[in-house]
Amino acid sequence: MTTPPRTIYRHRVATRIWHWVNAVTLFIMIGSGLTILNAHPHLYWGAYGANFDHPWLNTIHWPAYVTIPAHYNLAIARRWHLLFALVLAFGLLGYMVTSVVNRHFQRKLRVRVRVRDLSAANLWHDVREHLALRFHDPADPNAYNIFQKLSYVGVIFILIPVMILTGLAMSPGMDAAWPWLLDVFGGRQSARSVHFIAAAALTAFIVVHLALVILAGPINEVRSMITGRWRVPQEPGEDVA
Amino acid sequence: MTILTRRAVIAGSAAGAGLLLSGCDKVAEVPAFRKILFSGEIMNRGLQRALSNRAALAPEFTAAEMSPRFRVNGTHNPNTPDYTAMVAENFAHWRLKIGGLVAKPLSLSLAQVRSLPTRTQITRHDCVEGWSAIGKWHGPQLGTVLKAAGIRDSARYIVFTCADLYNGAPYYESIDLVDAFHPQTILAWALNDRVLDVGHGAPLRLRVERQLGYKHAKYITQINAVASLAGIGLGKGGYWEDHVDYDWYAGI
Image 1 (tube, each protein chain N blue to C red):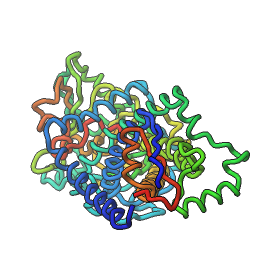
Image 2: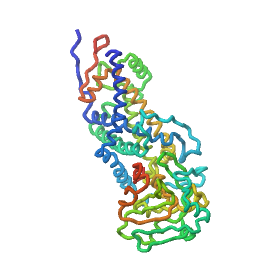
Image 3: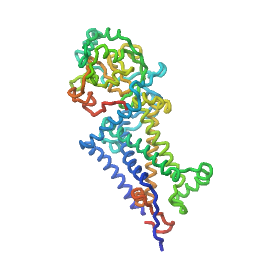
Image 4: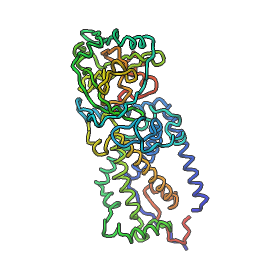
């Protein structure tokens, strides 16, 4: 006999809206960003960097099936990138304000440093649980595991802010308004390099995130991000299909 | 969930991503959406102007921080009969004309331009393509020339017409008065302590340091104060703006 499935309220409306806005926004930012990179696929450290200078990385020419627009058009790629950059930045700002007010960060992403969460034993336990495709603590299925917490904290508080700030540091107008941007990142070409590295990290996060959604049961996971309600997975050995 | 349906989910997602990518190109063609897409420029300009003051200076660098070699962007040589003849006579008959909505139209020789008080600045040139080069520029402030000509109250933009041709028409660019009277906006006649060479825009080019490279008009022959950009070229304020949809406000 299987027990009737139990559902819990997992994602608040602000989280769900922000999630889908970001899904679209990041898709556009990565595609249009690769078109912009195709205009000069060389990365440098420092304030300057051009054809006669030494790049630390020459990227591939990004193929049409990953770029926006598909055919090289720097002007249109910049239109996409710079409009959706505003969606990304103000979306993050709105989500942060909302999540501080409704205590979402504190409830969901609180990492108890040293006490329990980051101990070697807990991390190793979670690695084994992940390898066994068990992503939720049966005793408290609504809680995020430590890898979820660390990756969401990393994306919300480090990667997306770094994307936004390095993007601003590449703007000659913003460099006049906020010269400290260049001091933080060590010059415009360094900021451009960090922008690329953070984008690569964000892309890696998206790949792992999608892989885990598929492994954890895509219908249940996607539905929970639409309706907010999530069905608690049943114990191993029971039919969950 | 079986492996087969997982595979279907992955294949479906990949196909969906491909459709979305081509969908982006389709929606960018729809006039109403295109208008939204292009409104980002107005929002970015508004935000940047709100966050900075009119006179906020672009960063300046020391001689030790300069690019070893400052690459050429845009036209390398206008190669028109008129321009080639001017180069041959070392710009002896070149004139800079300042007109449009001014009280006193001017026609200056290169010697007159070089005799004006100059500003020297080591600044970073940022190409729209992504590269940067740092060089030392030398020349009078645009504001000095505009004040000498006495621009009228009805003027809103400054339009630069150049000696290099694109599709048979002179390259042109425009900036508004906020940038025209900015202290770092200069008419440069020297780069890195040498008289400007042909590749870098001889004999005179614009430096408008808070904007991208294509705004920095080279080979300037004419400066006009105008009330509106309509009727000039295709009306979008510059060659690239007219022909390939570059943003007119190139501060980001």
